[in-house]
Structures are given as structure tokens and as C-alpha cells.
Image (cartoon, rainbow, N blue to C red; front, side):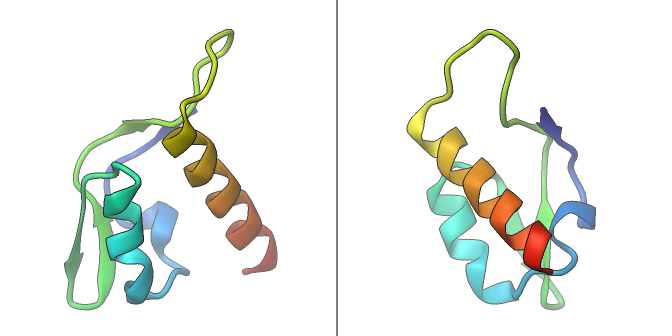
Length: 68
């Protein structure tokens, strides 16, 4: 699973979570209150174990997308 660069994946998220995403290893920035992913991010690869940061990102995204 690849998170594509840009704003689409985070369009429903509050700007306040951007520092947390950076802490998890995502290359993000804020632009006029919108979270921007500066580069594609490999969140998961079939047959390979997840590291802790990848797991946290996937759990965070799945939880927030379902309730958004």
C-alpha cells in the first residue's frame, strides 16, 4: 500500500495532527492549513512485516477514514 504524495489522503484531517504524522516518519508539511504529503510513502508491502511506525500509520488512517 502506497500513500501518494499530495493532499488527498489527509483532506479530512485537522492540521493539528501534522506533527504526529512527521513523528511517525511521514514527510509532511502544512500549507494554508492543509496537510501535504511531500513524497510517496510505502505503508505496507505484501509478504513483508510492518515496522512499528507503519502499523501506527495504518491504524490511524483506517480508524479516521472510517469515522470521517
